[in-house]
Amino acid sequence: MTENPIEIADLRKSFGSGKALDGLHLTVGPGEIAGFLGPNGAGKSTTIRVLLGLQRRDSGTARLFGNDAWRDAVALHRRLAYVPGDVSLWPNLTGGEAIDYLTRLHDTSDRAERRRRKNALLEHFELDPTKKARTYSKGNRQKVALVAAFLTDPELYIFDEPTSGLDPLMEAVFTDHVQQAKEAGKAVLLSSHILSEVEKVCDTVTIIRSGRTVESGTLAELRHLTRTTVTALVGEDPGVLAGLAGVHDVTTTAEGDEITKVDLSVDNAQISAVLAALSRLDVRGITATPPSLEELFMRHYGADPTAVAHRDVEAVTR
Image (cartoon, rainbow, N blue to C red):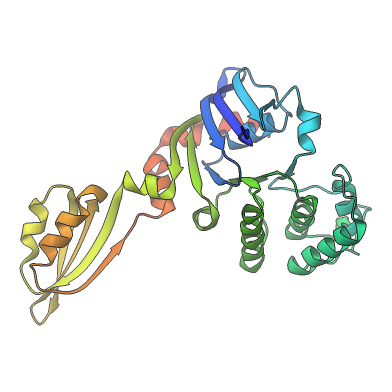
């Protein structure tokens, strides 16, 4: 039986009186890209540090490939690559030397193939490896870590805000390489504030709040729990729509020539009934938009004062 790359159950970690993790659950399967979402202070970085064996959990389980993340940390590090959101490098090493040093832990028997892949990654990320690390911008320091991570070809990638400081073109390059890693059967845990990035590449999403898992599943499963936005142009009176089950926030606007624009949101389970009702209203145009990941995220954080207050706990651990 193949072990899941990441298995977290009832994970708890406190700093003084503050609870950074309060019964967190998270699973990442083989060949899966898992998004890990939450604002600063939600517990994402603490979770990652526990997985890397940098902090010891208070209770619960944190396992990588069936092994204990704390006890077996040294051996597990040979099977994973980690990129943080703020990379620090040795100032007197060149970028190329830093990449070689970072990848030394991983066995690379075919030196010629490794050199070819390294040069290809440097070209893709548009990184000059001859410059000293002290001259690099934040974005270029991130590129060094990303090139090193993809060069090692591990079984598991752990990314914590990996595209911080990168421009949109380089974000797209990163996304391409994550997709290639998935196609090669690698597992990825991606913690990111760029919701469009997560939405584009992730198979599953876990949203955490105050150290707890509040939503977890595929995007399709999470969208099923919320509403779709519908905009339609109709030639008949749309008043009947407001009385339908599962319909919310109906607004109408006269568009001229006896055409009315109607906007509404509808529970996903009731979409068929709404479309049937619209079909009887002389529809001239219709658009249905599923909820974005941002809407799913804001469902839990849009008006939550504790999400801001809880940041103090995470700030202590950074």
